[in-house]
Image 1 (cartoon, rainbow, N blue to C red):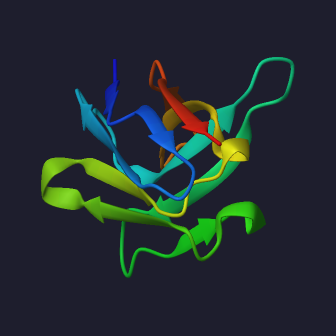
Image 2 (cartoon, helix red, strand yellow):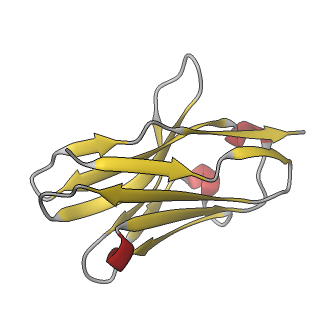
Length: 118
């Protein structure tokens, strides 16, 4: 079973930065993409950013984070990062890492809390 371990969450003031890390292990099939999603209580989980693991590593971002967040990958380490700059109180959420293999199977991490104070 794929294991995803997230780290890097915490409390930061508005305008500050955090870097999230997601390390994948026990991967049994080729990975198609990895990404970050977030969820606040009472709302659906939403996409933050994704990156294709193969090739040039195309990325996709939610409009709300474009220009502030950057997703990157280290294929040798099966790790993705989310650099979050200029954080806003509305970025407060639990951030989840997701891995999708080439067969469409998704795996999720346990989540890491990000809290941005105003």
